[in-house]
Length: 352
Image: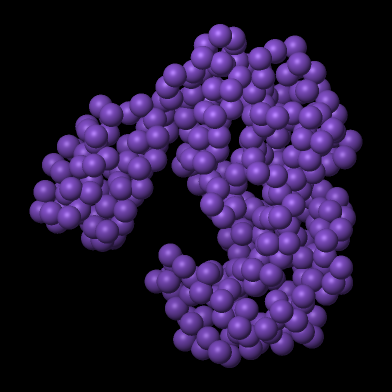
């Protein structure tokens, strides 16, 4: 397995994945200038066990909420992808169907569709109440225990050299015993591996049918709030004893669906769903920022258009017809000379 990770063919594939969507950045262009030599150097460092990740750049983003992001050096991101390419399928097969984050053919919108499917089954055409345990794990990425994570990984990975590489990656963090940096591909993947233990506890031990997880956010739907209270206590105990993490006391609540449940940017009710107000507010702030950057010549029109098209497609999953029409009209007004006929009709479809 380690030889596969280190192969030039795999490293070339990893490079293409790592630069996707970021090809114009200076550090990537510099790496690409001497691509063969740089990949060969990485290969030699891995084979000689002298590979050492460089220090990460840390910065704060406030969209949609304040988070500290740690960005790895580009050469390290190539290594992350090289590892991921080889071990992804091995672990993905063991993930439950209703784990939706950072997986092929999954994602947040698929999780929302699954939520709708579950609520219809429990609700039985409005014949009974539906309650939701909406839970969040407290400071999840900062509290993942390295020793437990490695123990879980070793169940499937028997190659000691691969474990050596994983240890190198996860120890490249301010705390050498726990935590993973937000923003890394490997962190996203290991987050799923770690909480797969919770998924199987919920499914096999608690026998819960209507459970959905997206990273460290999860929901359980049921028609009896007393049972959900019991499940909440058992889950929190399991997390504390087996994974050394815990539920967020303020963000983990049992809610009647009639009142609406916030999940993955939407506020979901029995018969409809809305976008969260904070989501709309953040969209408007980003739109105005991109507009200013376009006027100032810092970005091209395509970046603004792609943002609008993507957000409208997302917003269409909620009951937002009036809002989308309003946004399309504003976009047409702000960029009257930029829209091609093809783009005009493409944008228009999102306002229907």
